[in-house]
Length: 283
Image (cartoon, rainbow, N blue to C red; front, side):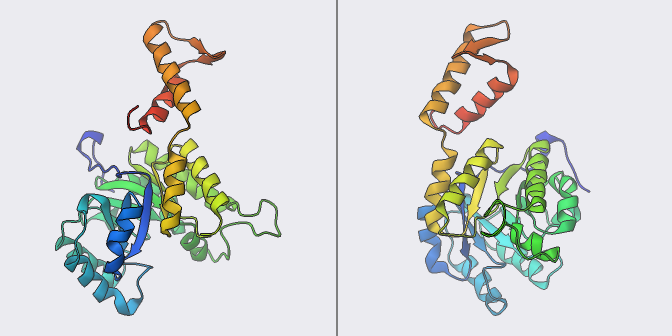
C-alpha cells in the first residue's frame, strides 16, 4: 500500500456536484455533456463496445474539451486496454482518471490522480487501503457491477418486495464504507448512478440522502438527471438561514453552547452549519 501525509497527497475537487458519463467514442456529445453537467466523465470502459475501444482513445486525443471539467474513466488494471488507456490520457491535457474495478492500492501505481471505482467484493473490503493511496483523489462505488460480481441479480428491491426501489443491504453497506473511507482519508466521495432514468422521485430522494451523509457529488448517466442532482446538493433557503444563524451565534458566544430557535447548538451542529454553507457559493 502507498500512502502519504495529508498535506502531500494529490487533491481534486469537482467543479460541481453533477458528474455525467459520456461515451468517449461519441465526440459529438462531449460539448453537449459539458453544457448539462458540472463534470463530464469521458468513458473508455463500459460505455464503449470492445470493438470501439481504439476509436474511443483516438477521439479522446483528437477532440479535446475543457480539461479542468473532465475525468477519463479507464479500464481495470488487469485488462489489456488499461495500458493503452493510460497512453491515450498521457497524450492529452486530461490528468484525472476514474479507474474501474480497483481492488488494491497497487493498481494505482501509474501515479495519475485517480478516482477509484469500488465495484467488486475485493475492492469493497480493501477500500480503506485504496483510499490511502497517495494518488487517490476520490472514491466512487458501483452497485450493478458489485452485485454481478457476487453472483447477485439485483441491487435494489423490486416492486413486489418490501422497500421497492431501495438498495439491498449489501449495496447499502458498500455505499456506507465508501463514504467512511473517503471521509477518513479526506478524498472526494461520489455516489453511484441511478440507472432508472424515468424514476425522478427515486433519484431526488437518493441525492437528498447522499447530501445528508456528506457525499461530494453524484454521478449520472443521462443529461436530464444533472439538474436534479444540482438542485439536491443546493441547500434550501431555510437550511441556509439556520446555518447563518448558527455561525452568527458562534461569533457572539465565546463560551461554547448556545441556542438557535430553541435548539441547543454545540460543536457537531456548528460543523454541520459550516458544511451547509460550503454548498452555497456565496456562503
